[in-house]
Amino acid sequence: MFEDDTQTDAEAIQDSGPLDIQTALLRYPKLVIVGDPGSRKSTFLKYIALMIARSVLQANPGIALEALCLQEPLPIPLFVSCWDLSDFLRKRDTVDLPVLLEFLTQRLEAYGFRIQVRDLDTLLESGSCCVLFDGLDEVPTEHGRAAVSRLLEDCVRRFSQNRFVVTSRIRAYTGDTISKGEFTRCDI
Image (tube, rainbow, N blue to C red; front, side, top):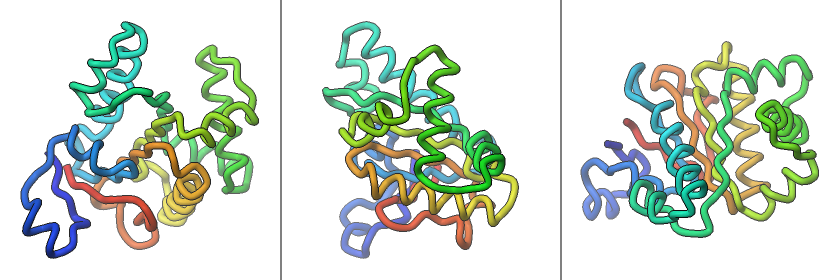
């Protein structure tokens, strides 16, 4: 269950109380999930990816509709470890969208998907993905977390038609780490 922390006073009166995961995904295509250790934030992201993949592999879009309230066409799930991403950015000594696309391309290639950066860019530009950023709190430094947050905001601005879900522990989701713009925070 989620607590929606971004409602206006009028919305709070109308929609008070916890949300289930389906409602949160349906209502907020740019979602930040914060919670305590062990609150199953990562499990939730893996569940999203699994339900979409299962729907596609079984040619049964009803699975994603029932489990996630996602209708066809189903997005392609891209699971991103923020720890791995921050390490990659540190080695490249730059934080920008081309490096993020390079990182994603390398990850996809490691799993046997032959894709080039320009093809991934086209795919993201089409709005065909659900990008799942896991563990923003696992980026080792506050400065690093803020830099990754700004990169995620840039990604959302550039590829706004996609779904984005980011997870973080509450203790690390403060100050400059807090995502601005289109993201909606929900507490788990």
